[in-house]
Length: 83
Image (cartoon, rainbow, N blue to C red):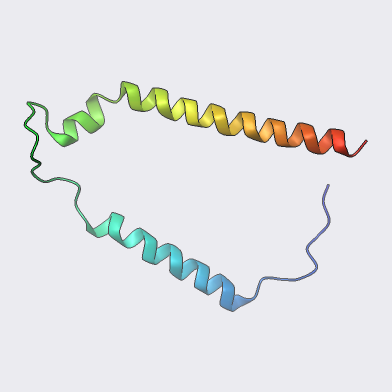
């Protein structure tokens, strides 16, 4: 399928990458999304996030479709350029 990489990833680089992932995930773990906003609504933020998510699901499906189409185009071009 593909050639094996000749160089192995150094342990320093692996540890740095894991450390960066941990640091980037800390705000999501410790910060809260709830709070008061300047806009008044009868729906709380949590309720809107979990119960009124129809548009969100449609947009996520559009993103997934776009990514899948992009991957298909890349693979098609790679296969045809090899001929």
